[in-house]
Length: 358
Image (cartoon, rainbow, N blue to C red; front, side):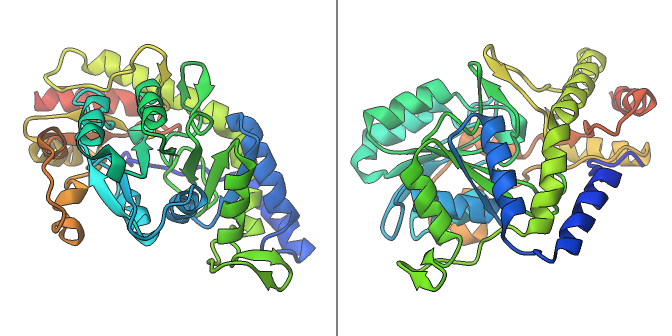
């Protein structure tokens, strides 16, 4: 079976972890600071704060820009539940706007309509770069500026993606990344917050470390959302390899697009000015479940990300919202293997399996 994901761990990660273990500094420390500096340099930001996972990165970033009890955050309904949960965990309420049917990202027109109707009640925009494709950051930045609210990038799936010449994570007021094992790079579990704003970085760093301002000095209530030195050690090696991982994913995606262009599937797009990093290669099919079963019978793994919009989840059913585009897309999307471990025979097998379904 060709897996939908295949995290890569090599000897260099093992050696770096062993070095950390032998040092005795297993928790937060110099290894984490080095990873933060290197990740900030990669994204092109002044600051980075490591966290324990992508959800805690989102939560901390929202606290970093001042989101709290009673606030409302505009976001997409079509994402992993962590996007909305982080808003709730920060004390705020998610407000959903529909998605673009081509990119599956937050539709700027839908966002503008929500802001126009209730702009004075919206306190931030949280935009997700879904599947590794940047949002329309120009339009969303303009809206954030017009309504004088922060723009938060959820870049959990988009390490290394580029928008108009700049890497995601460096364009909004603050951004968040996940290093879950299936992401384009991993630390096992982990996250990162990036920003050019020293005050946001300082508030975020305090929040992930019990509100600490000195060894036993605490200025506010916070959490232990710290990344371990072992995770940072893995992340530093993975970050070095990230450009080659992206190159492989883009090459595999190009091959899939070539091979599947004559099918009835709706294939991924890459708008001008955007560089897609293909955390997922996601297609749409009229009968997604039948295609998924057919692929499995032909030893091709696949995944549905995501079958239910967030506003339709039981935890958010109390929020009065519809998203016709998001709901339709959720019923049709299917992600095919695109990870760097695929070889030519794997790609041929995926393409042939889809054609045999057609």
